[in-house]
Image (cartoon, rainbow, N blue to C red; front, side, top):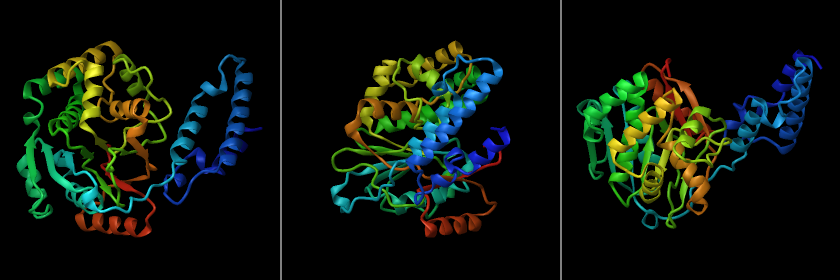
Length: 351
């Protein structure tokens, strides 16, 4: 069978590229997975025969792994919020770790959470390198009855530690700092859970993020970053899931579970020890791509705490960022009317 025909057949099965099944109203059928898996297996065998290399097993191939990842993610059943009163649900905190480049989307991200999070909101924290600008961007967006704090990055991770990360990790220093801030802020307000939402992401549908039994909403996406897995294993998390990645655009952190994960992994929850672990692994592995926030917590929750979560389909649509606030609002209004996605992320051209 020719490569051209294989491309036609692959295009006929949306599971191969995945965009269709990211929607809440679409999901792949088992027969499609089985048939496409068979076609990819045949293609793999033909390529191995042509190369004269029959040693690599199909199940280990990148195509097989990607197909498995997509089918697992897109087969999760969408979850509707439980019919319960706010008084029966635990209160949670909301956290944004933001940069000025996202201040045009941040107000809509905050409004989306206030609109769609069904748990009572105990407080809001916004951490950024320019708290005054963040406060100005959110003026009149947050109800007066909801406590809100605007913190500087240095209030959570000292300037010395941030400089050390920048020196060791080059362009990834700020990225590492954001992860540390998320973890440390989620640990700060024990025992209240903290929902972290990326500043370029807007929630579109009502969700209960943690129920009265302490079970939380958990999402995973249909592809993984092997470098994240290398870091997790260097930190001793050997049962990291290579089919699911928990690096989504939001994460509900339960502080007790997060604290246990940090102590068991790094023997500490203090910023200097966590920075030391990051730098040590970066020197050992030779690259600075890791997730000590979402990926670490998600893997621990998935493998060790199955009774503490319930799944929802990770149905996020990534879009180019409109140039003005009115256009953003119009796009969001259309997406909410369609009801096809749980969230939308508005990316800048270089992200």
